[in-house]
Image 1: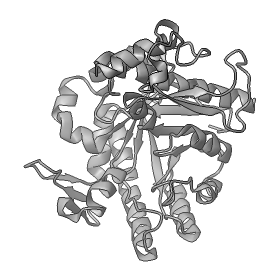
Image 2: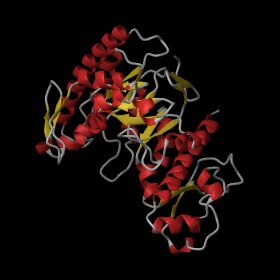
Image 3: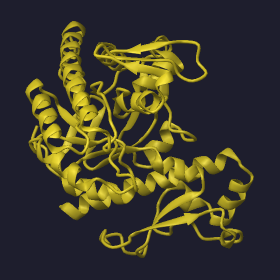
Image 4: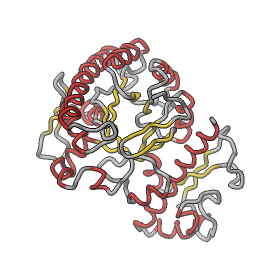
Length: 369
């Protein structure tokens, strides 16, 4: 398949139109909303996490409930992350919770009496069994500022694990006798921190193994929260244009537009939904009567629903937004239910921020046509 900025990516549960923003449905749900809310907000796909799902609700429960799609009532594509970043967060920052070896990841979450092991083989087995549309190889994640020796070890381990993931994936697909339409895609993850030669080594090795797409691995921000534009651009340049790339963990509206311009087509992040629940709502700065307005300058504005100025406001969050929240409810009412700490606020706010993200990706796509 030839990938370009205006292209589509066919998956077993539907077609993705790039750019696509996916909310994090880590444990099989996007907090505060259901699958119908997501569809009405224009969400094309969600990302779930094998590392967390194997713990809660557990693999046997997921299989008993018919797989991730049936369990969650979500009919569109699901991408499952392997858990490499979660292992980094849990173990590299607090070794008492586990360790990583050449075999895989051993961990015991805080407060849990159970120990888990996640190997490359098991990660793929779980994701395929869950019914994912895109499975992602287990990788060894690092921070961009980690020492060179750590980055080098990460790349070597990521490559070795990718080979094992690919072999396991191919064997499973053959055993299950999937049709071409049923067969999930498999993505490799490019590590290497901020070291160009390590990024190149990792990318070349993954290309040699062979994958349907690739992810940018590692923390994508510097110590001050700025996007690592140079290394993101360099990593994208290492992969031929026909392959889609997933900017893993990137979802700030400005960062989505910047990375799309670098050639990334898939994005996921918990930020928009988390911001919504905590009272930070997204709006476009340009007039709502100008649907074709460009994305230049400071086009993003935040509306803080807890501000007193909204107490008696009958205005919607964003007059140009067509979501359920903006077409039926006022800022004053939303502030009221926010102060009441009612679950309805979380639902309505989440619907709005997700619709903002899909309106944003629509604008980005139109801008490139």
